[in-house]
Image (cartoon, rainbow, N blue to C red; front, side, top):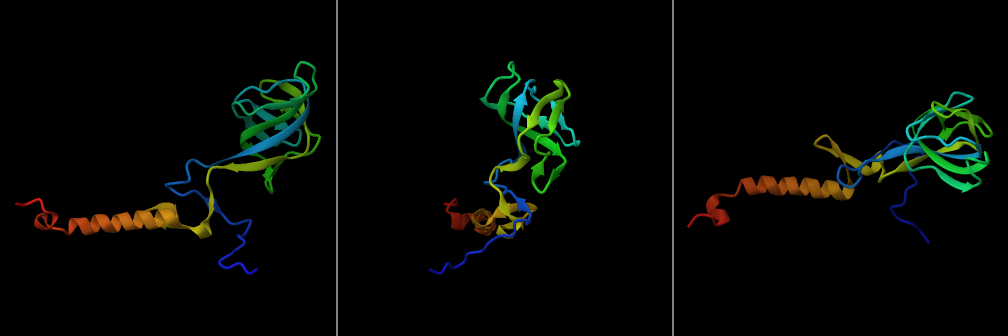
Length: 165
């Protein structure tokens, strides 16, 4: 079987949203943790032993086993505004994490945090810029076609529109 018009995009290619369908795209770091003894608060800044930081986002802490009270909580959380991201990874496996509110030794990383993207994103090779905004191909056709129709409507006289008796 031969695939036509198939292309593997460059993993390092820049991505962007479409002005009409992309919405507000954003990135978060998903962190898996173990030995959780202190629950992070919303908007708390956490820091790894190696200096990577991130802000705990609201409603993004998921406990899969254990409890904070038992100091054996395991689960996932998401961070915004992360620093120390390298090759879409954050932190170091088994690194101890401290917080601006929770103090030292809040929990231990279980593997490295991974960068996740939310929203509809397109590689720049699949977008075009029109009037200072980026559009996917379908919306570019729609937007450009609508503008052409608007310009054509201006050139029609009142008699041609049928508004004169």
